[in-house]
Amino acid sequence: MLSRLTYPPVSIEDYARLLSPIMLRDLMSAAKEVQHLRFVHLNSTAVGGGVAEILQSLVPMMNSLGVETERIVITPAPEFFQVTKRIHNLLQGAEGALSAEEWNTYYGAIQGVVEAIQTHSLQADVWFLHDPQLLPLAQMLPKSPSETRLWVCHIDLTAPNRHVMGPLLPLTEHYDGLIFSLPSYVPAGIGGNTPVYIAPPAIDPLTVKNTPMGEAEALAIVSSMGIDPNRPLITQVSRFDFWKDPWGVITAFRIAREEIPGLQLALLGLNQATDDPEGQGVLNSVSEWANRDPDIHLYFDPANLTASIDSIVNAFQAASAVLIQKSTREGFGLTVTEGMWKGRAVIGGNVGGICTQIDNGETGYLVDSPEECGERIVSLLKDPTLRARMGAAARERVRRDFLLPRLTLDYLQAARKHTTAQPALNDQGINKIEKPATVS
Ligand code: UDP
Picture 1: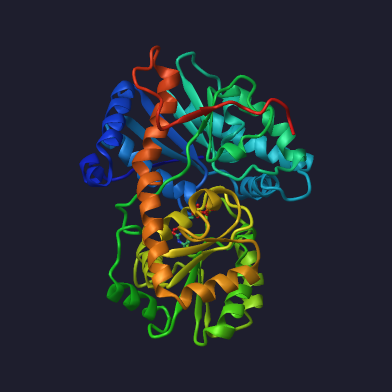
Picture 2 (picture 1 turned 135 degrees about the horizontal axis):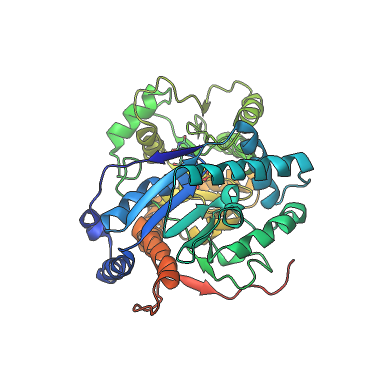
């Protein structure tokens, strides 16, 4: 029911050249104040998706700062993930409601997690419980007075379905603090008096995925996967998921190809998350929509790859003239951050966390339809100077706001507020915000 993930050590010194001296100083000071405490991050998938991506870097970074931190993944039965994917979709605004049986599956699995935690005597001074999958745990697991429990919600809660939001809202009152990616995601009436913090996600600039890759290496990798290196390529890197709108990306590609003959499209979804049971159905539908077009490449099978998934993602991002993230809901969109960090012009859906990252016309484009997306692809492909200018601005935006040390500082500061009597630092870097007063 619980699986402990371990990581090789990293050194904070390696990140120093990318950080301002103030950021480095604040990070060290915040860490120092909580070094006597033990932290645990609990989430529902070891691989696949943005949360797994963040935690695999955040946990070693916290340890490198002298803060003892563990990552534990829950491993419940597949029925749990069927239900939690439904909850995810409903919270992002899908229509419908959960049946009594589905609610029972949800709470029953979390009861199993509670028992496993007790059986293994898993203890922490500070718990970060990630996403709706873990939400009921704070209510169900007996708490010692010295413990701090923070719920981290990574999804887009702009327009949640009230049939699921209503029953889940009271569960937030059992936390000491709630962390959201954007202020606009904080639901009215959430958490009683529980403080709310805003901590937008971030990428690790030192991973294989995010270390700049040379053109020759990138082209060699994409060529080995069937891309013609002599023709233009556009890519969307994403799980095969309804909200990522892969159908819209194909439509936009077809529109753009009218003006850019020879254009190729890659849809890269090699890392289907274990907590997402819907991927196969979406993939089947997208394959049908692609209609065996030889210039639409769908990548979904992680078996028999000649390079690691991280290198492949990096290669496709580096080898593409334009990157797409045409989501219709997006909690944050790390793929956007990754593309921007590589100095690429990214065209993103005009939703959620994508709008926070892309300043329309400056660091990329925001689009509301496949047609608009198609037009932007054409204008970018025809104008290398525009692409270069946007790409440079995009990289600088990520360097300033969306790198891992800033997120680590946000989490440490949120924890520190609950674990130290007299905060010694100023509160820059983590925003505690006023909550809307009533339930929408
Ligand atoms: N990703 C990957 N391989 C793939 C597709 C996606 O490693 O084939 C990664 C991607 O690089 C990013 C994460 O999965 O780091 C997706 O995070 P994002 O926030 O964009 O979306 P989520 O999947 O969490 O909705």
